[in-house]
Image (cartoon, rainbow, N blue to C red; front, side):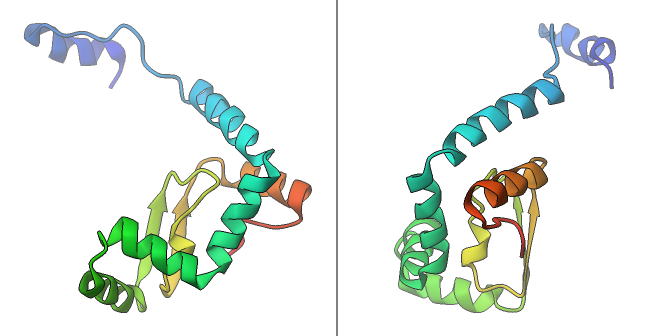
Length: 129
């Protein structure tokens, strides 16, 4: 649908669109923000440590995903073991590698660029698995 077709639907309701977001501009903005965070060695180090430390992982899932509910936490961990989990738009900090799932899938338009940058700067990969 182009902007003219969209406005033909919106105008009778009193709305209209003047400008549509440009994907290229959006990705450029996202990359600049992402790169500024990736240049912070302490922040990137914390992420890798977070993913590698199972106690931190468990606390994050318990607190953030399961609202500090032990039963829900146990059920979540048990439920994902044989599943494929999907994360969309993670930027450089995907959370799903901390889940004990059978397979992890990421949809991140900048994944290759992020991984190349992190590999070159830190000698590690974020999306390799």
